[in-house]
Amino acid sequence: MDETDPIPGFTVPVHRALTEPILLGGAPRAVAILNGTLAAALGLGLRLWLAGLWLGCLCRSAASPR
Image (cartoon, rainbow, N blue to C red; front, top):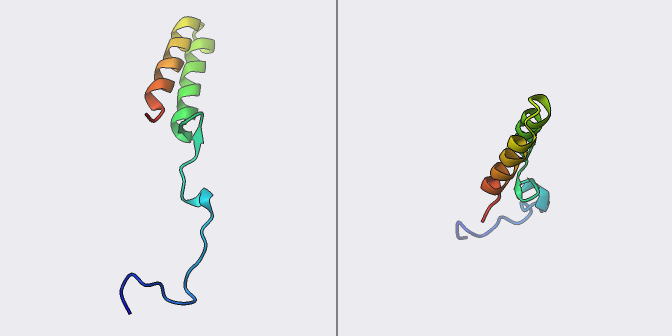
């Protein structure tokens, strides 16, 4: 038996959700949540609407895979 041959009875189907990363809008989940939180805090908390919008767009474009 070769090392790459599976052992009969010991193969398990794995759901696709366990092997693929979780993405929100094309960016990793944690990065998208952090980006939204920082942009909202800047835009709503500090009342810097344009800076919050700019930061959100900048981080979103940097986080998405190419």
